[in-house]
Amino acid sequence: MRNATIILNRNLPDVTDRLVKQLSQDNTQVFVVEAGSDENKLSSFCTWHANWPEAMNDGLRAARGFNYGLFKLYEEKRFDEFDAFFLVTNDTEFAIPDPVTKLSDVLTNHPKVGILSPCSERWGEKLLLQQEKTRYFWYIHNTALLIRRELIQSIMPKNELSYMNFLFDGTNFRGYGLESELIAKAYANDWASAITTEVWAEENEKWLLTKSDLIKTESFENNLNLYIKEGLDWMQSKFGFSSRWHMQMYTKFWYDQFFNFHPEFLKYKI
Image (tube, rainbow, N blue to C red; front, side):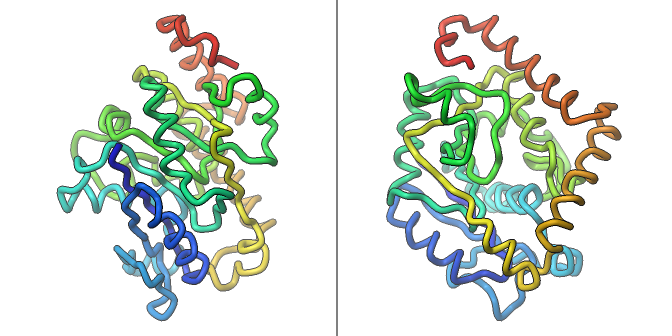
């Protein structure tokens, strides 16, 4: 399986460089999106620099940042070179040196999985992954996702592509609820979303807690409040949902439909 890894950096080059060096030893080609980084704080492995005024002032956050990396590959006619794309924030840490290879093996063994996430020791989902190390879920946190190209091609807009819409809806700036929308689209297009304990990943929140001024974002608490408020406003505006629960039930509907069509995968259902 040919993989591309897209890592987001904003003014934390040392953190990003360590992750790049680890993943460059793995079975993947690594690309770094500078999501509004200052010129003197670029990763040594910078691939593309989002340096227009809005990006420099506000950053791109995960949704627009990953969209931008995917769009640049598409624009450079390299998108079809890869079978899957590993989208990972630079504050994600892996306990093993070859997480992409391990995740690729899981994806190969689960041909109907379009989205795959490593598990975290802090997630309750790990309790459901004891007999089966990989199961299909209707909610996944979005710090590290391996996504099949065919899934992206099935849901991406057919025209007017940009960093605002390539995979995620960039109008939801901070991204609360975007993982649910993506998973719903996956199941609606006959692709499952899974979590596996074959690979463990942890989000190191100390960078946001201690370096928010360097990253040019709000404090952890203020960012969390805006993340939820803006996400709920987006859900209301786009779907007419008045709560996160409505969004999750929408995703679960498509999740259940998938197993109606594919009863052979019921052993992976939670």
